[in-house]
Image (tube, rainbow, N blue to C red; front, top):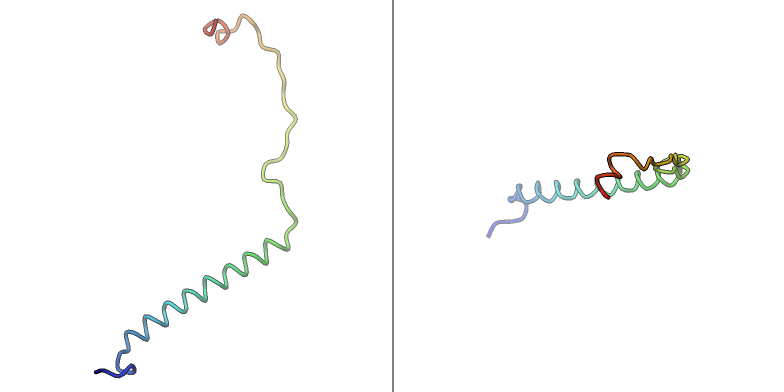
Amino acid sequence: MSSWTSLWYVWLILLTVFMLLLCGITASCIKFCCRKKRPPVEPFPRHPYDLTAVDSDSTAHSTVT
């Protein structure tokens, strides 16, 4: 039986997993705090619709009918 202190690679793996979890939690908290402070931004600005008349003699209309 080996003692836990002689299994240095197990401690290294545990430390690596712990550090990755800690970095992930920290990044999530920072992202959440920054998103909460910013005012909500509309993803796509609304533009007025450009309604143009469709010519009945257009090629698209003639191919459909």
